[in-house]
Image (cartoon, rainbow, N blue to C red; front, side, top):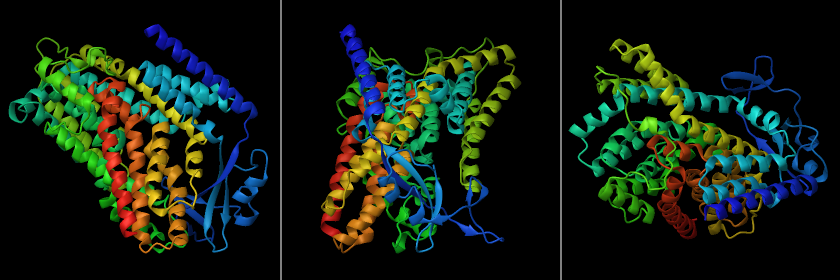
Length: 574
């Protein structure tokens, strides 16, 4: 059976490479105009400018929109690659826009993500599946030098370097020191003694921390997973249950308790000319918060994990129920053939002789980490996660040295931690690269471009949900999906309001907005190539594909119920 699976996987990869070469040599690219709106202002010298990453950028060489070689009319007429990669234009109403051309290969744009996901499900080897998808995507783009033209440029990007720094050095080092000092085990013993009375209380504390850390994304999954792993293991909670709770209270809660970076990011993507309630930045942020009660998927996802934490598994699916019973009856936290992402070295302790662990060795660095992340968000608008983990790592090391641990033992613990997360970090790196390639070849653009204005209005929310689910599942990113989908979906929704003369256009727009927001979260949450999916499995010690498969049923139930609720709401009220 193993030989057949390997042979089948090799055949799928070979077919994928042949199709990629065909696309590169014989398929015509479809170019589309992408417009970006910034909050521009006039400088003292009368020039237009905007703020980007805290710096003032002066806008130069603005041309009328109709004269731009990269507006949609010009792109549709041209046969080759556009002459410009971006250009500032001024529309007839005086509005300034940044135009950037983007292309897709039609259905073929989904090929790398499709190959990756099929191989991931077939082989349960995310490393080889991700690398195969990267090779297929690179061949489609005509890049055959994988090292110098694909891997190194992506690794050299600021975002990828930050991920590797955080999750390989800082997170791995912190987990390693906690393992060496016994701090995590001391915390688990403390919680067990005073708060945790069994599986249910351990899971409820995990759920509560997931709600408490409402920043969302990688920060929430890392914080919650790292914190609850030792106490959940001690209470014999299955790793499938824990990874689901951690993953399903990360982005879903961040879209409900949106006192984070989400509104500021999303508002820049949802401007629609002529729509009064989306006219200014404050209007768009108000629109975001007004639509929160319509985030049905996120609300149901968080409620679903609450029910699971109370040992109500009716809506959790067969796999999670089986995992719950396995842990309860046998004490086995993983399935027999599972391959947990975290190394064996991080699953136990190796405390030096004579060293006495204390719960404060875990709590002080953790509280410092949370405080720095929250305070930097309050003052700067962005949580400085690297600072937070760096200070927590340094504090843990200094406490251990002050208590008498030798430098050799400390370095040994640090090395154990780095070794324990290196495989997961490589998977994370490959996931980022394939997400970048999927964006370059325009898979998301192709999916959204399939929509038209002739649809019945009540079908649009669920179709937007389905489209964004596919984009996010294929690329492994919700925020990347927002950047693709919102600038296309919101004008389409408004055009449908106008053409079909809806009585309540603002409500319809809110439902469509919530469908894109929630569809992206659901697709990202279920994707085996998503950073949050990988980190949820890594920090809780779960097998990646066991986490993906067990989470799929309860998440899909919530998404299906949300789709029905959105459709009914717009059908009867819009």
